[in-house]
Picture 1 (cartoon, rainbow, N blue to C red):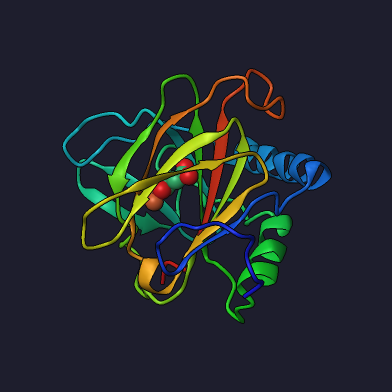
Picture 2 (picture 1 turned 90 degrees about the horizontal axis):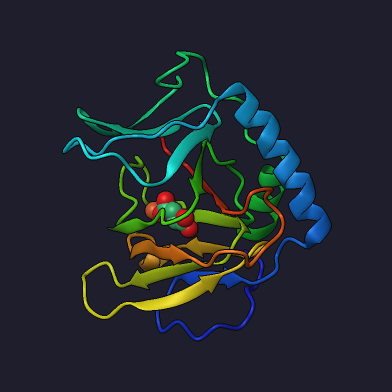
Length: 205
Ligand code: SIN
Ligand code: FE2
């Protein structure tokens, strides 16, 4: 795994690469994500309790993470179009390769779109079959206040994730609790109309 940039998180296994993607890479990645979204449109999922997410979602890759009244799971088809998710953008596969150094590529890429007051409550990523593979998270657009704390509970801290920043939950931080308190409007001009995209690469099976 490429050595991450300096950040004192006090959370072993949380890796942070500020500015891992430069402006040109961000623009290329955005174009690749836009092409994927043209195949698999954003939709608003519901929690198992029937509450709409404030974040819009779609996926790329063989499997996509979905949530509805029957629960959380990975599935090969878009819940609204019934079609397979588009392939994971090549730039993201290259980034996974570069930063994790793992032989096996990710098989799922969740795409979250935050606009306005959208946020994500504290949770753990635990729907994957193999919890030893890292979760790699790429930020594009407006800066997010990312909250993270130990799996077992206790104090959390906030890390600002700006456009082009990449972080990973690995090892002892693989099951860290994390969420997005809010995004900071007009902190990036990458997305027309503002907002933030988060791309989360995982090995689901
Ligand atoms: C997530 O945990 O699924 C999203 C985190 C983020 O948007 O940075
Ligand atoms: Fe998550």
